[in-house]
Image 1: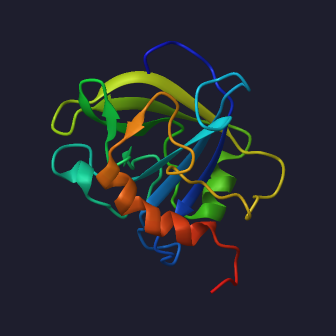
Image 2: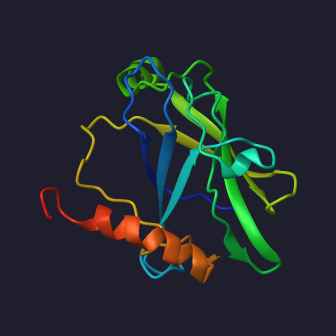
Length: 183
């Protein structure tokens, strides 16, 4: 956010509650931003997790089920710790319009096009400020179901996390790190 740049990314879109495709669900967008070997971070990548929320206060703190990915504001809900206080991250679709929340229908609708999202930041009660654009395209390979995103182990480079936010997130991330079938 502080300096212009380009970074390759890996992303996964999900339906959080697993409702039937014809019903609204909370949309999740997990982003892995890759850094060069010499880049800042405890690893060579950072994970950012966004969910469908509202855009204004108090809606930006509520998970909101959506039928359309294109119309779903996405936000971090829990703030990062910036130099001047808490900072939230958000994203909104710039194009194409009409992307459904059904994952197979999303893939068909997007096809070979790119999904363009505006990237934003805000203080907890402040207005959203545009700072960048994210462009995602579907990869030709099948989804890597073993890929796990973890914003606790792989925090956003240059950002800090509040200890209370890490404690709230850690139990769910610890569960997601386990291999399928582990008790």
